[in-house]
Image (cartoon, rainbow, N blue to C red; front, side, top):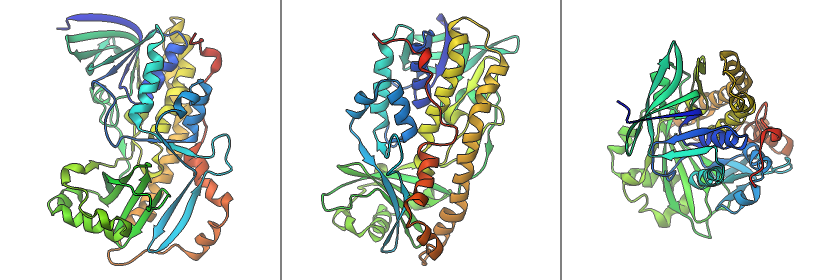
Length: 411
């Protein structure tokens, strides 16, 4: 039995980008909100660190851009792919407005910024080490969550529960909701490599004979993503880590003087790639957004940004009824889903095509380098063509903007 019962207007489960952003926006609008995060902090490695122009614009609309720019980061204005010895530029943010770049920022720093700003607001209640494990229902409607906390079990009652608890959502399972899985041909091994001044400056992908790797320039180190065929992680880990090291040096010879890294398999983390989407993102009293509603492929690094777009759309529609004590009808939750669904569908469709036509074929061509068709190389000579994927992934379709009329002054 719960040792404590709490009432609030909105309870958000999950302190990732969607949850913290939604909580902050609602609190800025004067809505009492509790945000639950099961960990003691946000410090977890290899989370989505790619902050795209769409998110930068939201940060600017919130008046937080100056503080954001003080976070450790690297700005990226173009991306390429190296096939053999040829580096082909493919994505170009230069010339786009208002932000002609994306930022690589440690996610924990970004979340800490939003959380610290939220704590300055009376309606914002962030509770760390609070893990929701079940839903409270009455008369067929979700009316709260059951929570494990350092002091015991808590029952939090809310007019609306928002599940932002990721692709392995506990609340999604508790609600009996099941996502449609669209498949992925690969998983990703994440690890770090020290970066030297003599290394390339670019952030780029490398396609070898049956291998793929992405190198993100993080100033003092490389954040590396090594792609393996779906389910191939266990087979690779059964081999000596020397085999991975040799593959890394073969694809990126400038790492030869760091051929002793990664030091062990414990230094390599696995991301199980998943692309899925719920047929319905809501039940009476419950809304799911971000990865809880739609898991994205790492292609394009767009997951964190779509989650934040979900949060902004939800806040724009929910702030007034929650603040004014109005009933949250199913039709309103449906409007939020309808607003966000086309953008999610479009990005997932493009990701699936890239996975099928490029990644799966590249991983299957052992011993043979793939080739960029001459016509595509010719098209990619033009910046306008390279800006197309930058616009799609960087700004997105149906871009969300903060309703500034809902925001109350921080002072």
